[in-house]
Length: 129
Image (cartoon, one colour):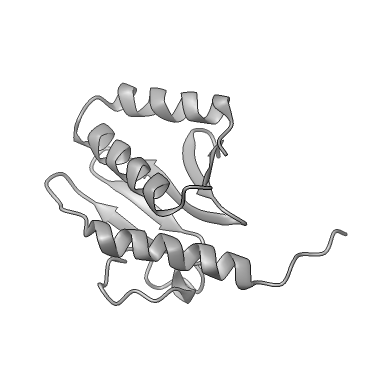
């Protein structure tokens, strides 16, 4: 389930980029929806696409020279294809930086997404304070 506002804002961001970054973000978005059909799209932190399912999965940030896919709990996820290439020194997050011309291993990316969903679902429920 995706809120119409978030979906509209993400689509607008992809169109606004209008270059390889927009195409990359659009492909990533499609892969997310294929891997996790129940994904929720959100728009957070002053214009960042966010994909969630029982907790945050990853963000899709676009910068001048990179599209950064940050997995909230990346350090806890198996990454046999070694997609994570950024934020490797953090204790929790891990990221995939994609530069113009890079090819994303789509099957490995979708496996990471499914592992993130499984991680989120395995965590104990947070108690309200």
